[in-house]
Image (cartoon, rainbow, N blue to C red; front, side, top):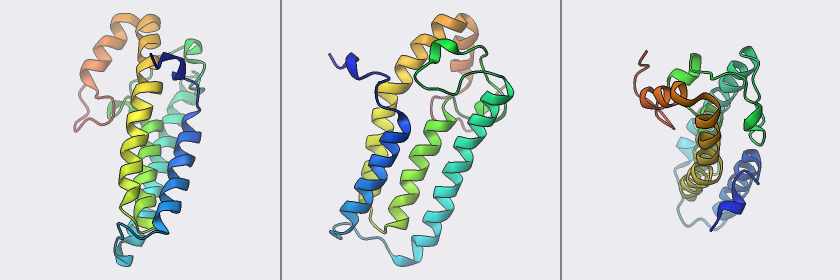
Length: 158
């Protein structure tokens, strides 16, 4: 039914919309967070950036595509570095960034937008990508999926 939305909106656009929504809703002051937590928000936001950048660097090192709309061009299955902890570090970084923005804008509504971002990415970005990865890398990708969670694994299993 909603398959036509798969891989249509660039993930960074979803991220920016979530940031804008968090900022906009924060003006209403419905779910205020203490000002003292604002510095924590900057730390979390930057951490999200580092997580995402680590994924991009790993893709570049393995000479495979970073473009989320050209999954079929993936030339290598990357499973080391940050990919030992998450199958989707770029998307995880975006969601972490939205969580950080909740503290920066001092409004807990950002947590709602983080969940919505996560759900959108899961359904319309990650699931279609995983179907393509199964086609491209077969059993190797299936084994990787058993070792590493979609969003975050507690330990790096080898």
